[in-house]
Length: 155
Image 1 (cartoon, rainbow, N blue to C red):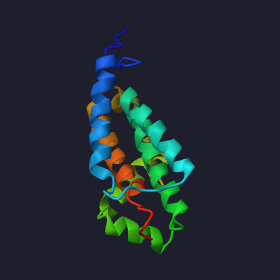
Image 2 (cartoon, helix red, strand yellow):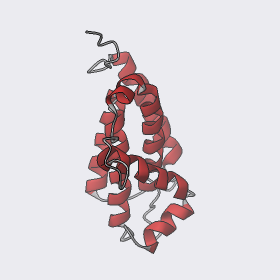
Image 3 (cartoon, rainbow, N blue to C red):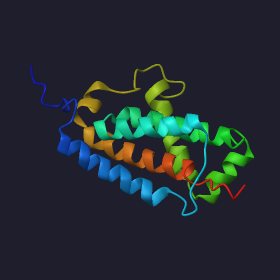
């Protein structure tokens, strides 16, 4: 049985630290210079997102990233209404947020109206890990950009 496609679980310390550096870089690129506030729920999810990213749980990163955006927008009173859309637009993340939602929904629900089982094809998952890593990295960027841009002095 060929299991070369399996990622190391847990990853080596070196791989974990390299991913941690990438995550820290994304965080530093995303945070508002004036800081940011959110609720404990989003804060806890951001910590879990970091662990998923460092461990290479790419699908979990995509799903969790979308959840963080939704939780943060809900905290701001803007989930599923114009307040949330305004924040997303101000951050110039409309396309990125829509892409993240579509990725998450495809992974969880599959193609809308389709009867085929296309949520997470095993062959794709096993052999296209780099693709999922790139999608996860973009997802993390979107989640952190939204959740780290709510300075206390701005409403």
